[in-house]
Length: 360
Image 1 (cartoon, rainbow, N blue to C red):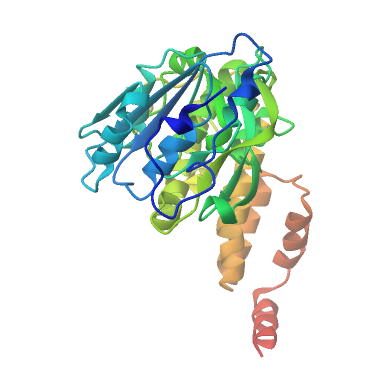
Image 2: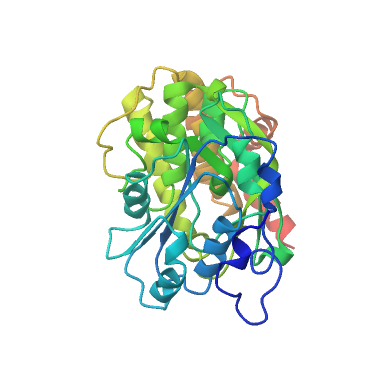
């Protein structure tokens, strides 16, 4: 049984291994007569150095029921030539100006007809056999969390884990760890929550997962043991060039949520962030406001103003923030909190003397 490798354009000179002259063996799929249809969207803009590798990694899955869509934002770096080169094997592609990555994902989603959906960015890849692992996973779940690897290239990549599901919904959302490339979701559930938010450009995956979990709960998630995708870390990646914007958008998402739940203004002041109001606030009835408050306070207040004041040796601010924090959360008993609570009781003059002694 032959796959697409023999039909696709020859690999670039000097390129070998996956996905250049290696493919997923089509016999991988021979033990089943039917496989769930999977739709993959690749949002793209001026990633000509990587996009061919991305395309080949999707096509050379040799997955029996694949829909592949590429939405390019009007690249000027040779990407269009690559798309034309692979056009016979791509179900739909377009290169035209858009409103950013989230808009491109939604444009692709509108054309998807598969049971499962994910987007693979134009500098990332699927791993050999990745879609086979997804296709044979639990078909009763709504969200599949598969593993991924990370690195500058496939040959030097290392395991990155998978999207973490915590013991509670609040912990999963606040202390999130999302491996988006390995996160596959039923297409109809993504559409039901409106796709990805186009006013978000950095944490649209966090927002999407949050809205899915708020609607369906943690029971909707199943874990796929395999590593199925590769996240490329490079100098031009968003995470490398504008990490502060990820944090600002994340704060904004929690700010919206906190306001809708009526959380303490004092806490929300420390959460910070500013994001335009969502078109439709999701149902937040699954959330425990008290638990959410504590988690947000630890993440954005204790690990924010309190820790920052301590590092800067601004002891007046440190004592003030600890006092306000403990007034809001008097029974907080995390070890780090207990330690700094004791330190905060020391007079400022002695804290300054201790700081000078340590500086020597």
